[in-house]
Image 1 (cartoon, rainbow, N blue to C red):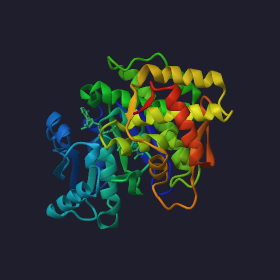
Image 2: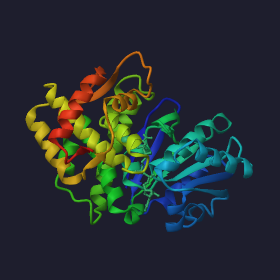
Image 3: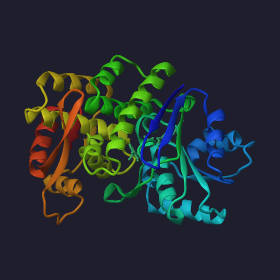
Length: 368
Ligand SMILES: NC(=O)c1ccc[n+]([C@@H]2O[C@H](COP(=O)([O-])OP(=O)(O)OC[C@H]3O[C@@H](n4cnc5c(N)ncnc54)[C@H](O)[C@@H]3O)[C@@H](O)[C@H]2O)c1
Ligand SMILES: [Zn+2]
């Protein structure tokens, strides 16, 4: 088992990573929270695979446990589903001492976290991530949100968890496509901040699962994210580097329809595009671009986008048709393992690069 700490003044928390750790560590964390009521937020898939798993783990802890089961899918990560959590909390007489436990992937973590941030102006929550993506990225750092129909993650809040328990055995039931998507966010942390992590995961195959490798990779990944978040919790600057690949990634998810491409798949195409732009802008050496693109080519399937013209591209990137500034902050690479924020990158320039990228690399993104 490995342990990390995120040191934010007054809101520090622990992240434990390991195999078969949940039964011992979750009750300890709940007891140290001095609550008598836990509300588990999960979805139908997890509830079928692991029926009442969290209530069983907590059965001797002297707390009442209620489980709120939501529909599964990115297309349900919206205000309507969020309000079902509030309905549930009201029905089960939750109060300011109620502790939420997010039991699921990034979608459940983002929604339960947002509910915890806003219910009665804030109640505590614990993350028990069950996907590789949530293990390496979304369960740490305190960003919570739901999607608006026209833009990803636009309604949300910052809310740090009390504790994160990364139980690796849940990955045994995760489908291969989801494993790969999670691997992309792990790779992202290597590309933007740690060439050694990039090298460590080269040549690793995800299946069969190698828990020793996963424990180390998740530890390093959460470590990178934790250190960035400690320096800039609310993204006034540095934290934006974690959005590498997400400008195009979010556009793909929204334009294709939530749930069509997995978040990691969309971000993978977005990372490749951002690396391509970095190389074209003479920031990233050609040899690094070649290394990154040939690696991504092995793990990504093509994203196909329909009816995407310059106007749609601009509106999706700016989220605002009447935006004064036709520019966005765009994360680029200086070299493998080093990123920077390109302030006010013109959307027109991004569109020009996007046309070149799709013409030269339909194996990543194809326009139809
Ligand atoms: N808050 C953040 O910092 C942050 C960072 C990255 C991504 N995100 C968000 O995370 C979301 C993506 O997360 P995700 O990839 O975990 O998707 P997800 O939560 O939709 O989970 C993927 C699928 O796997 C299923 N599943 C979960 N655990 C399983 C298990 N152990 N066995 C079998 N099936 C399982 C889920 O039910 C779902 O169908 C996106 O909405 C993205 O915006 C947030
Ligand atoms: Zn992401």
